[in-house]
Image: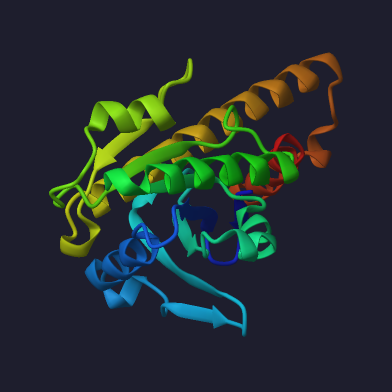
Length: 237
């Protein structure tokens, strides 16, 4: 869920990279972190236990104005794809604003892709989340390998629903389409946020017309505006 920080004039969004074990999720985050200006990003943090590891960092997208002088901050996570780490997987997915599913293009990994896809959807249901409300971008990684499956086959397995998701052919080890994937999910997240804010604004105007409020009870400042929208957005998410 988007979080508004009035003191820092930022809106934070959580994007989680999910997908097939050893499919390239960690490589994606490492490449993104390396490419970003150190002044605008946090440290790449590894939260490790005896059983699993979660990678995390955030960065300030200074060229992504939201409204009223607020800018976007994106928190990027990736988690282990193995079934044994499912509790961590589901916990990190909770309250995500956007999701990236990284699939391994190698033909001998198709069963693993499908299993990971099933786990992904099971965790969505476990968190009472829906792709009707959360943007998803697919990345078909390792396209450079000689045994890569046709893109049409990957689409058939993972992107054959009534709603088609953006998908990218990638070689994360070389950085190919890593930033394009990030740009796509970031754009989808910001578009979704803007739509929610617009709908909430409209609802608020309708309520005000039906039940006028004394002028001294209403603040038109940007901070109060964002605070009100934070409350309605939280209910909506």
